[in-house]
Length: 123
Length: 216
Image 1 (cartoon, each protein chain N blue to C red):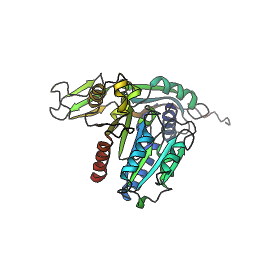
Image 2 (image 1 turned 60 degrees about the vertical axis):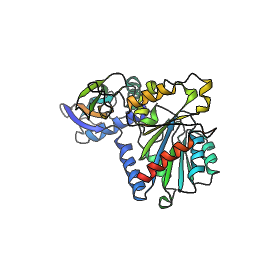
Image 3 (image 1 turned 90 degrees about the horizontal axis):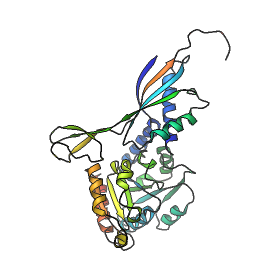
Image 4 (image 1 turned 30 degrees about the horizontal axis):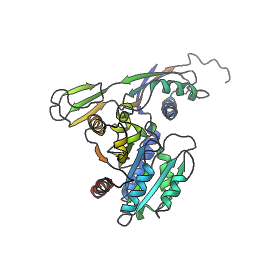
């Protein structure tokens, strides 16, 4: 359900970035969503389709990059992927660990289509 | 043309959460975001906590619910200031709602603020409210598979409170499993087991909370 709030946040980011490109049309937004960010990609895609209607993002696609969980052990400096919700160090078993990735909720790229020629028509 | 950016999707929420945090910090208020499913026992634990601490600490409460002021009225009976928020369908509190609500309190007359979130293990995990710590309740009847099923909220919480432990003899709930999985996911999480009904373990929770307030 909160994917609608996430979609609204993506729209805000796109709107701000497009201020410098008033003549452009938004073709695609790319976001990075960590596996522990608490967002379901399918729900976000659906929310995006609903929320973009009637905005400057109408028709724009949403590309979602899934970011796996990775962690680093502070004791032995080992970095590793976490597939099973168990953060313990894969090398020394230590629990003094930090999560490196997996919480991302970030807009990383906007793909624009510049209006090729001003046609002189009114909008 | 592709434009590279790096912008937090929740920027609008997080900026206001930072404002809330600065307001609370400057008034020296310790804020707890209380999370858990509907029926996990958030309001009941809050009532027990207020009874235990209200002579020592000045407490205020923001109550978040989809509808009704049932919880706000329960807490108000204990003689602490309460602001009830109704999200009218919204599945979580967001920082702007909390920012508006705490404007109703005299923060200089407050030591400890509880923000009881909407009952939900999913959406509430993602939205920071400017709190000092998230405390998630998991009640025995909900089942012992919840850390696996809803990892984000347990990964983001400072404290896990396992509630309704008086029901353990009647349920197939493996407490050790929950604690093991929560610690694997979040090695720094603190865990308390309690029953607000019998009072068992409530003292441990109060001690833990006092220690956090004192450290802040």
